[in-house]
Image 1: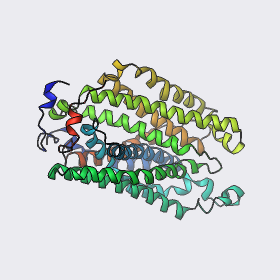
Image 2: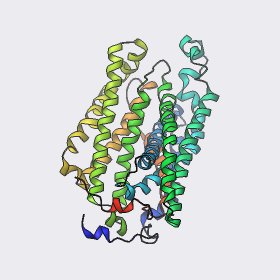
Image 3: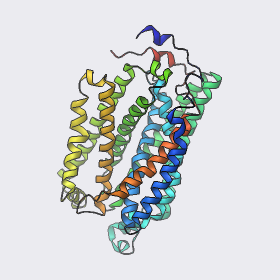
Image 4: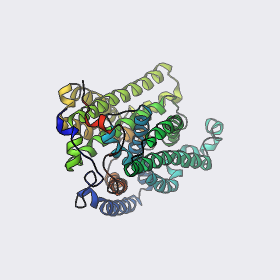
Length: 404
């Protein structure tokens, strides 16, 4: 590493977002765009309210999965005593701090429960013996108790780690790092169960006859992969801040490229294993779920996912030179965000629209709505703190980090 990286002196002043930076203006703009877009989406969906709630659910899951991945990343960095990631960890902490937003949006989800989960909430469904056997778990009060619990634990973890990390910027107390390291272990265990059962509840239970014990792993792989894609893009967008330009080097982009590459393979592994086990078992309750998603217009979506979610990132990021190209890593990251949306769309929408994709203006405005609020929350947190943990004891290791 060049000597200039060793000479960087980080303070809260030079490591914070300049007042005139675009990100500093995003909280107000994002909130306005978000609220107006959601209102427009609802107005467009008044004649097709079912589609509005399904589209809202997909985009809610999309942005929530980024935040979930961020929480796991922050905890894993402390648990493993990682040094390379210190200069990008603060942005991950800020992404994780969007968690409270999903509590608010859960209220909207509540109005669409009978639409999204009609397979186990309707009176007709209650006559089904399979549904009856699952009523102790699949009932509306318990469903939302679990949802609040999952989000509460993720929010607690996000706030606890982000707050203490920011506190260390002021005090320089190295004990905070070791305290967070010790706290990360129990949090990771609990959150591992939370993300698994959240996947069962929010996606798998839309089709209550279908079940897959590996689905929690599949969803976790998606969350972690899309988070790395989002982190790469955010890092690049903020790279014009002078201090970040000096401390976040090509070595860090190389690692982000490796993580996007690796977790796209991890997702493909989980997806293939799930499909293989269900295909081999050939149980009607399981195969029917795939049969719907392999027919009509959904077959083309599945083909796109197979190629776009695995083959494209695999070949474009395989070479070391590609992973050390900021342009290539960011381009693939943008592509993976698109693929992640298509993945969630393919998981959720066929439950109601078996004939094929129905993508339209409602989807676009739901994206702008939830996305605008997500960016507003993220930007509001980002402008209040240093962009780098300036007094983390492992910061020197991150500043001088080199890939072998």
